[in-house]
Amino acid sequence: MAPRATSLAWVEDLAEEVISPRPCAQQFPDLETRVAEHDRLVEAGSAANAAADWDGALTLFDQAYPMLFKTSTLLSALSMRLQRGEAALTAACCRLLLGGEGVLPPEERAVTEASLAQAEEMVARVFAILEAEPNAADLMVPLDR
Figure (cartoon, rainbow, N blue to C red):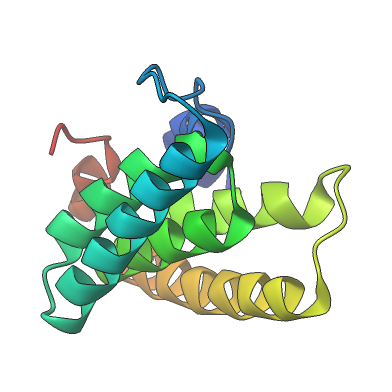
């Protein structure tokens, strides 16, 4: 299965960028304003998710996460990535979260573990297709979205 590891090597680097982005460059007059803007973005992301606008929701969650680095916000973004079919990236991010130095609260750990299981199942289904149709391997390259 060497091609499998090679074809997804880029995912680990991207997962690190997703988990540990640069802090938000936007300036805020105080912490209260920063928290309010984070919460506004998360609320808008949740509304977009409810409307099945996963691209819009992901954008909003990705904007909110570097403001406070709340794991719950990151998990919301990962859920949107999974909805968009980014299973390999979601799985890699979940593994980083679960294997990291920080301690996840039990509820966030449970969500992360469930997301990891769902993502790994999706990845396994994709690789089953690839094994059945060798020419499909060309689909496993990173795409600019």
